[in-house]
Image (tube, rainbow, N blue to C red; front, side, top):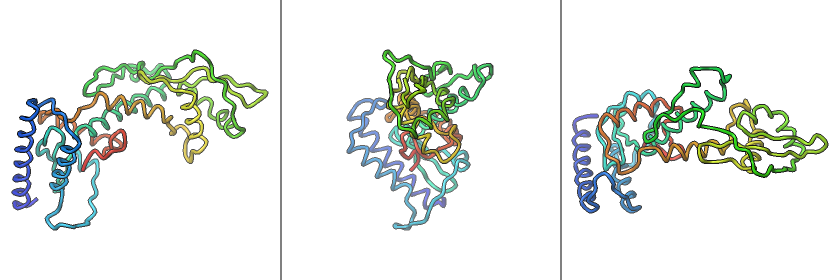
Length: 276
């Protein structure tokens, strides 16, 4: 970034900080700011202006990578919502909630897959402890358990559904869905389903997962039940950094590095961009 661009950026940062102080006075609480939709839209418009090139209307494609993110230079936090960074001359704004949500989901998923792929005797896996920004030392054994249904569900299946389930019954049982089969028909009795923290899967979730297995175009073991993804994403969201939280420079830098190590750094757990 040349000196002219840096001068423009500094002026815009000063204006944003000034507007932030005015809004903080209105609520009289710097840390616990509650944003109205109007304020959020206004702020996002200002943040987007920071990333525009000198020539208005430029359509130059910008490619970002995890390596660029790992080397990003921290500039500052704006309005307790965005973390501004310089990625090889490209000014970007990290949504602090979306970024931390992605980091949390990544940790939960990797821990869960490590547990599923272990023999149960692997001490290294058994000792895994998961830490989120607002929830620490989560025991791996508490991540997923099975719950016995009070009333087993009898499901009538099509011939194709039945064959998919029989083909992948071992994989399905790994996800804590247990069932018995009526060999004289295509009926199945669902006995138990998985529980992810405080969420319990339903018969509908079971059918949805088996349908996904039937539509697979690659290794079936890579197919994750939609219920599991939703439950983990919700948990990661609940215990992540929120809007309105003022972060130290060290916390911002740690979040940037953690995000750069995620498999899908640039989208949050719910598919929203983590970087603009």
